[in-house]
Image (tube, rainbow, N blue to C red):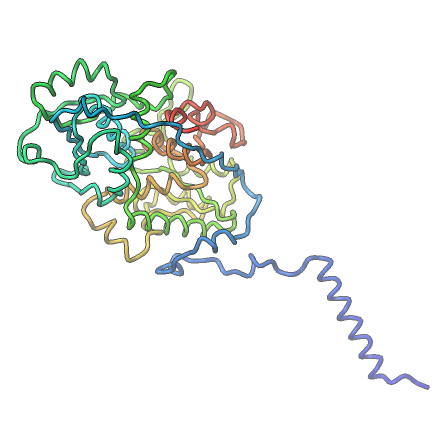
Length: 419
């Protein structure tokens, strides 16, 4: 009996379909979830809260030279007891200046001086770079954390007494990392005559090295530098949102992003074309940073945060190599931009930069200085030790060869405060 042609055709089609399906499975032809997701644009994130759960679920990748975080360190200091018998009636006032990279050091010096003299510390205000540019401490920082952390270390008053707020105080210049000998010789005699002082910290050099032997003043400095400052809630929320957005934009790198301290106005002042006798430089321009990150084999789709405020055409050379390079103007939520950019002050911008750079997976200082030194201290404490310092004289392409000496040698002051 002749076969029905329709049955023959049906059998052929069925066989063909199974063959195609088998071939697809064999070749892993199914598109992964990552490939089906559209690339996010900045506008998509306006007003959207990215949850921690969403970040954790981002696909991880082995591409790029990412190193694991070090263990989160714990404070190994104990608060030295405050003796009531040593207290005087005098007050020490001071201001936080020059941006958050200086604030912790200024607080530490003021606390050390006030404690040595038995004086009461007046809650500082925050001064900008322009005359008359003054903010309250709580505009940026958590005032309750500050007071609680110093309880039992030094007496602190929120409000200056009348004689402090209305009178002219003797101003004493204090070198950073002030010693008890300096206080005894240079500051205490003036305090004994005047009763109240205003301190102005200056930085003869960047001194963030770990001391060979820890003194009582070092314990006080540890508490003051790493225990007193935290962002107030609104600032904390903005930092968290910026970090979350950068992680989402960097999902092809497993949600990991790089922060680069690169401020064009400082590059111009430092003259970054110059090298020292070894051929090394103290700062690097956008193109050099791009080549360095490329040399380190970072994925071109990695999100990069720059501390420069707004986009400038000279940054294009970096963006050509890493298209997902952003300034804070690109990342800050629209409803927060006026607060940051139209306030007539750069203090909020500086605080955002400092704390984003402290939380990034990789930090690259294009400029040497206090920002690099104090961001390194915060990162060491939190275990985020992938701090890469460019060096155009090295032919190595291994990230471990460019780890900051603060970390590689463990000689940052933070290592004397955390263990």
